[in-house]
Length: 132
Image (cartoon, rainbow, N blue to C red):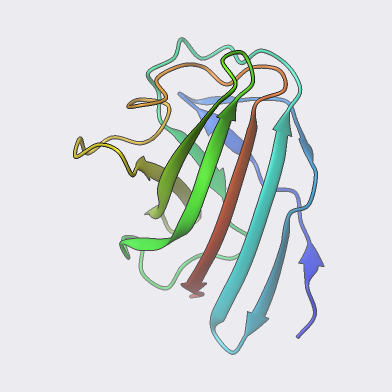
C-alpha cells in the first residue's frame, strides 16, 4: 500500500487548537489501518487544562473501545518534557493517550501532563486499528 497524508483534528476540552500537520499519514491494508500523526501546536490553547486531548482518525474504527492501539507522546515545549502515552480509542473516530506512568484512568491533558496545549508543543501518535 501507499501512505496518504491527512489533517487530523486536535481537541482538548471541546477546544480545537491551531496546529501544523508536520507528517500525518495513513495506509490501509484490508481493514487494518496504519496511522502516523505528528502535529505541532501553533498557538496557546483556550482549554483551561485538565482536559483530555483527543485526535481524529482517518477512518472510523470497527469497535469504538478497543483498548491500546499504539503509542504516542506529548512534548511540552515550555518545560522541555516528554509525556509518553498508550494510544487508546476514545470513540469510533478519535484516539487519546493514557499515561504510561500512572494507573489513573484519565487521558493525557487531564492526568500526568495536565495542562492546555500551547505554542510549540507537539503530539505524535503511531497506531494500528481495524476500520469499520
